[in-house]
Image 1 (spheres, rainbow, N blue to C red):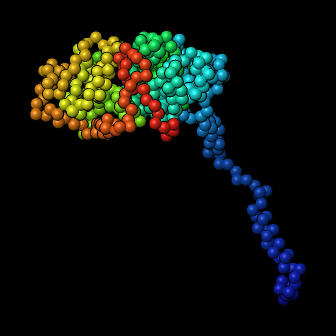
Image 2 (tube, rainbow, N blue to C red):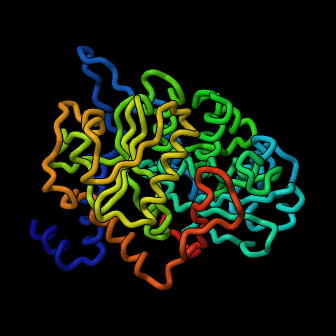
Amino acid sequence: MSDGADASTSGDNLTPRKSFWRSASWTARSSPTAPAPQPNPGRPPKRPGRLALPVRPPLSGWPRQASDDSGPTPSASGLAHTDAADLSRVADHVYLGSDAAARDRNALRRHGITHVLNCVGAACPDYFRGEGDLVYKTLWLHDSPAEDLSSVLYDAFDFLEDARGGGGGGGGGRALVHCVRGASRSAAIVVAYLMWRHAIPFDAALRRVKAARAAADPNLGFAAQLLRRQPRPGAANSPGSARRVLRLAPHSPCAPLHLVPKTALPSSSSSGASAAELLDSRGAFLVHVPAAVYVWLGAACEPAMAAAAARAAAQVVRYERVAGPVVTVREGAEPPDFWSAIAAEPSVPDPSKAGKRRVELYDLDFEIFHHALKSPNEEAAESTTPSSSSADSASTFSPASSSSSD
């Protein structure tokens, strides 16, 4: 024992042997050659968890909330045309395209484009405005399901009808409707126009557009708004045949003098508000009932807003084929049949409230509009060509910026 002890302490050649032996013993006990545990015969065999599931697609292939601003511009090979420019002919006088098409002056001349409807003024400038032979109209749409597309449709229809010749604004021309990629915003405008022009449902109009331009893909919010428009015009259950209230408001803070009819929504505290409770003394409203279209003007309504309301009422009559008359009423001088038409339980409001109606939900829009009226740098609403359509003095705006946060 003493020899072994001396060897372990004084023999340099024995110390590694003891360390190696201990290491080898530990390795042997954890060796992979040890027999594997036997499965329990009372339990089903284990299977890999995802073998029965489909292969997960890459993130780039997943549906996007909005597709117009993402990804590259579609190549010409994926479009129903042979021109290298990114224009797709959808109808005799309507072309659908991207920003690349809008900036290609030679392509615009080659296709006989006379009108350009820019759906995304915040991202794409009007490249050739002022050259004399191109008429521009600019919208400020975001490619978001929450964007209010319906409020600008009739202005877009007026513009396309002017290009076709139906509006008398030069006539016989061709219009390019474009956004960034020509996929969502501009496609939705063209689909809506075909629905009205040919009295066809949404799916039929979308098929026509996609046949001309495979990249056309309106976002879900735009599609939902267009689906709700299908019964128009003339159907008994259409929005035009039921009571509804529209308020005139700026289309966008970028175009505060371009007033469009937006749905008048009640505040959260009065979700069950009647039509009368949606009126505001500062503004102009369209009250559409089966028998008529009322233009209600508040006591503090600006003349520019009153004129925009008259144009919007004419658009409703034209594009919804409304048979009832357009009746203008002023706050404090409403006839009894007005209140009978808009209220579920007819009652004449207190005359002392005239001029004092206020809906807090509208405050921001009125602030934007009134600030623009007082600003000397704000462009007045004007048309670049004569027009006899219902929006003959609707604004055509130059973009304030070529960038977009979309």
